[in-house]
Image 1 (cartoon, rainbow, N blue to C red):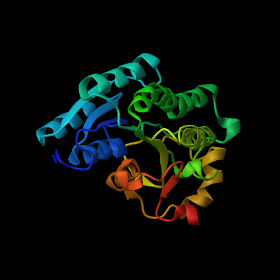
Image 2: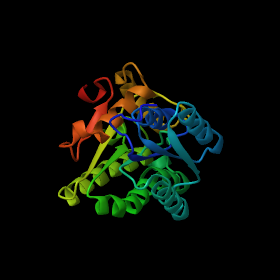
Image 3: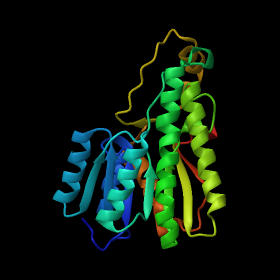
Length: 255
């Protein structure tokens, strides 16, 4: 790993870092010298990412648990601060997909799970990390939103609402803390090859209603492409970018 890179000696927390975009982001930050806290529900996957980083000469630690629980959020932040001295970058990436359900088909269980994982968890983690960033007078927060945060035709009602909420959270943070040295931005991935699970009933109203729009997705990106955008928004090169939502979707949002 490059211990003299642009993120040398900076503490970076990445959620959902055991696979997909989160894994790619954790590795990318580590390659640039960061000390990475790998947070995920998947213990085996998180350990593998830590092993890969350390095997290349970097520094990383895994924290395993459900970020929907405040105790896990506190453990992530406490571990990052204790092990690496602070949190310079927070990547709120962990998320789950819905079943593309139209609103009348969304159960309470699906709604509550999507909001808890995709919106409440990043809210809680950001709230816990902010005091450390504010004391340091600097920090970069990057959210993984979605193409579904920009339109109503990319996912089901629960996922769409949660990701629109992520954009609102990003913009509120940017305004509230713009004079403190803390920045907040988001990427909005389009189709991306990851391990995220999509379980739909093709005969349900939601998938049938969305089907005509899915032809605009274009060529899927790989996880490394999304990670590169996350690293850029967290970097000093983006020091005057705050409150932005960057589509990384091959032009889908322009269609």
